[in-house]
Length: 435
Image (tube, rainbow, N blue to C red; front, side):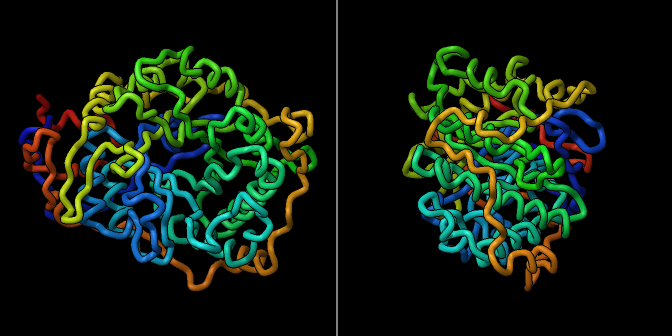
């Protein structure tokens, strides 16, 4: 449990920027040190998808962001995925807080709101210029923050064989449009990819369809830069074999793009024991994969939470928080994040061909829909009005809300530790006395 900490918050903290990450072959690398980056992360959507109404989002309330980023920093998190965001809100303070904490952001461009997502049923009806404008606004709102790691063009849209027959070309089309917009309007390349359902019948066909390359177009912008999967196959005291993790390594060895878990953490038994953590960050896995994000930070009806949030802003740390913390504590973060990127040959993507697809009902159509009317104009000229994001100077970094251990004792002196510009968060729970 936490007991009193001696950390003090700075009265004013300049927002020193983390070093942006790049895709180098099938790994993320630090743009300066050229070392591989392993995600040690959580999924963050307080209230769940049902709680998103567009009036606020997880990056719009600085006091809440400071509270949660501090708790995540203590846990040892370096990457946070956020599913539902309104690009028209101001996110400067929240993103600056996560940046100061040494955390990168992976952002979904879709929301449950009408005209803000591609539907799995008749996707052509949801692919139109109003939708494209929303996704481009997401890029505009976040492209200038150095700790934005990647965008997801879709999440589990292909989750069964029905959508597998019609949706894949639309995912590649959305990816193409986003990458073209980034190339036109961003000062740096930000990866775009897909978060897939770990469904046996469609997973590897989805992976092959999205990572393959058009031989006649070496710069094919519809090809995913990254690939992620939401996997809950390791439950309780499973093993590398019984969980199917050996199959994950086998399936993704030789990938031409970085692959990671965008969700993991089976919640049976409960509280979770997270024995998959040593495997995910062990040598066999890290030679192929780039870490993962635990589902999820907040306790919702589905019972996957690390913390319980209350309407008055207070927080209680749950049993899953402690077991995950203890598993992270066993990792050698410094060694994990200091592996040099390989200087060997980068795996080449497979050529797009129907032979890549195994299941007879999965799409083999690699002719993509053209951008909806008006979309190319937005790509050329930018969205209007154009949201702008920038890092800002932060004030007091002391957490104001009450945070309690699971036994009801109060955590005191809780404050964010602002890191230097060249640091990502590594095992920062050592700054707190633990019993």
